[in-house]
Amino acid sequence: GGGDGGGDCGVSSFMLGDLVYVVPVVKSGVVKRKVYLPEGAWIHLWTGEQVAGPHNIGKTIEVLAPLGEPPVFIRDCEIMHQFVAILKQKRIINTYKMKKSSTTGNKSSLFSSFRKKS
Image (cartoon, rainbow, N blue to C red):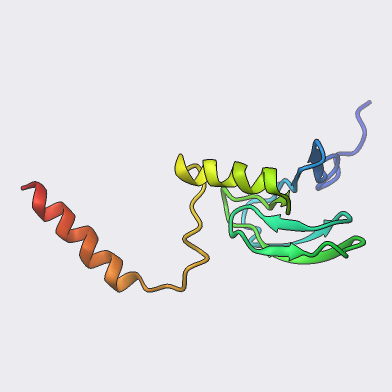
């Protein structure tokens, strides 16, 4: 017979090489999640924030994990900075969260660009 299917059974964080660390979020409705960061300096991919410095020997942090943005961390090193720059250019990731919400100015310029089309 089959074993008993536990809740988060079998789904855990994993490394892609040495440079990328992914934490799958399995349950829907999970907004925050505790994440164990392995040794070393890490940057949160979606926000660009350094979540662990070079002296990190492994620690647990709590991060936001909205739908479609599972916690992904990248090594704080030159090659990964270049990689992120490319992703931003291609608009695969956008770091709108880093800027403080000054949406009023953005909206007016957005609407004016629509008006120009008519």
